[in-house]
Amino acid sequence: SRRVSPGALPPPNLTRTSRSVALPGACDAQKFPATDFVWQKPGADGGEWVASTQARGLFLTVDEVPCPMTGIAFTTGGWPSMRLQFEECPRKTAVEVPLVQADGKGVKLVHWMCKVSNQVDPLLCAQAAANLVPQDPTKASPSQELLDLSMLAEAGSRGATRMQVYNDCYENLDWFIVNTPIGVEHGEFDMLLSLQKALAPSFRSNVHVQASVVVETVCTPNCEGKMLPECYRRDYSATPTGQVGVQEFMDTMGRPEVKPWAQGLVAVFFVIGALMAVGILRLLVAPAKLPERKIKSVAVSYHDVPNASHTFFGR
Image 1 (tube, rainbow, N blue to C red):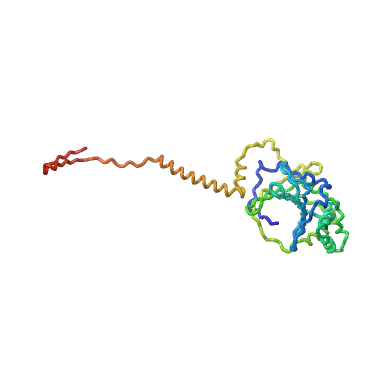
Image 2 (image 1 turned 90 degrees about the horizontal axis):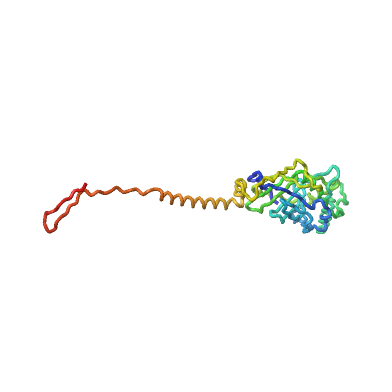
């Protein structure tokens, strides 16, 4: 992963904001069995906990365009968070939610993570449990078959920040950050931190990617199909269709992948216009008239008669 430093942070064009965002399938735990996920063990330098899937149990729909979830990741740098990955969207997309320790009932993650990772490396959870103080081997038990993401749907109904990232060097992407963290079961949070520490990378990249970021606030329906009243929802009934407004045209021309072509096109039209202007000016400006030459006198000499000539004077 790379840290993105926004070079420009424009507001969203209101004619192109998200009309609807949803996570169909998030409320059915039966769609997330551990056997449908494959843990991608990081190398010796460490990395995030990432499990890929081809089960297509969860979809992200933006403006009714669906794309399947392709993986689940848990961060190992900084404060823990869970990230759903959608690599088959028109733009690669991630939905991230912060994780905190729940005061009461919370989402159960760790035993499901151990169930998935044990298929590749049975020692990961055992070592993480051994690093706990006091040690508790039962927390490494791979006993959870299904993952319940209904709390993620509930948190998303309270609002999320969508960031559309544009960059010349890397593939453009969409990043949703859920504004409300979800609580992890009280007895599992310390084990989650231990797993995070066991996989933490030995070094952190200092690469900063300059990008243009378009930010907007969206909401996803919860398991009851509801969202909080304060979620921003716009009435699009009066929005003209089939027309491109001036602001939308300017936003499109300002995108990093379009801007060089737009500048080149403007330069070509400028040169053509300058050549046409020069030609028109030449047609409009009359050529300067030369002064009229007048004949003042004409002398006629006769070669047969020496010293004989006649002179005619003009006006």
